[in-house]
Image 1 (tube, rainbow, N blue to C red):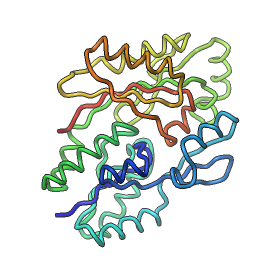
Image 2 (spheres, one colour):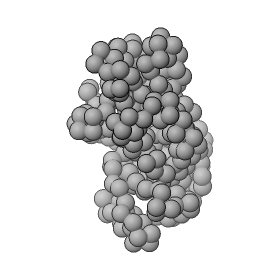
Image 3 (spheres, rainbow, N blue to C red):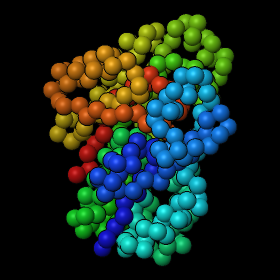
Length: 278
């Protein structure tokens, strides 16, 4: 069985990376100052970072339904089956939208809710591709991913102004946080983004973020990804070295892509721990 494996823009996959890995990406729109652009093809990561630093309002949306249908139809001309791994169902309506299409494809479409986003979703997609290439049945793949997937990420923004613009915190809360120099430590766990802690300095926030993310780390079964959201290079490399020296591992380094950065802003950094599926 020839299977096409698709994820979406939230996984942080460039066009070239997708080609190299043999996967497909359902691109998501970004709305910058009320103008809509398709991520990657019409607006680059650098463009988004520059727009946000200049004060632009940025919002995200799920892949357009028509685009998703056209992608599925096109791939099924050359493939027997599609496996689609969208962003966590608790962060977007993409999963529900895709599930509503399953019956229309007569058993040729499998949609998986890994409850992941960003790099963990990307690496889960590569593992699903590997399982499919080994001949594993799509239903078995879905059951394995949805039963065994686990991730925790600490996400530290550089400036809470972007959380305020995206509606993640109120203007009043942002004003108080700025006055008291409070830095939030966000957590991505069980498919949702929530506040894990709030501390007085960015350095302390990074330290707390590492401790929270690495609390259940097992080097045999887990991997660590540190994501650079256009943050200070010295801070980022110091963070990577601290984790590697303390835990005796090699950290995977990747960039934080627009769909996540649109909410947390440039300067963000994330420490992600994910259980490997194979």
